[in-house]
Image (cartoon, rainbow, N blue to C red):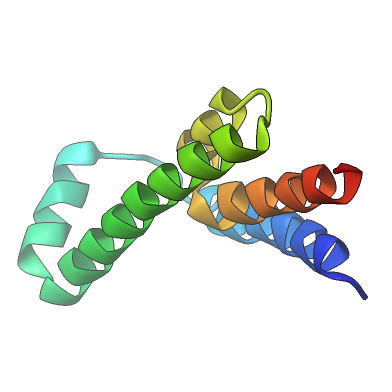
Amino acid sequence: MNRKNIYLALTILGLIAPYYFFLQVREFDLQSLNEQFAANKLLGGLAADLLISVIVFWFFMFTEAKKLNMKNIWFYFVAIFLVGLSFALPLFLYFRERTLERK
């Protein structure tokens, strides 16, 4: 199995896994979520780790996409907000591999 196919499999997993949990949430209360992050240091640390990872991914994505002349960069940005980094990162890496194969 080549890297491109592994990235595609991880993209599918990165789409399904978060939504498995998201669809179980019956009501979403942003204030309660913020209180839980503030009260639980472990959740706060995980949130900070994820935020830093997203920022690093954006930097990598923009520089790589520009270097490889990739199109539709906005799609990966939207993918982070609609699903998350677990979907957007392997999706970008899949299309990056496809672009590299074509060159």
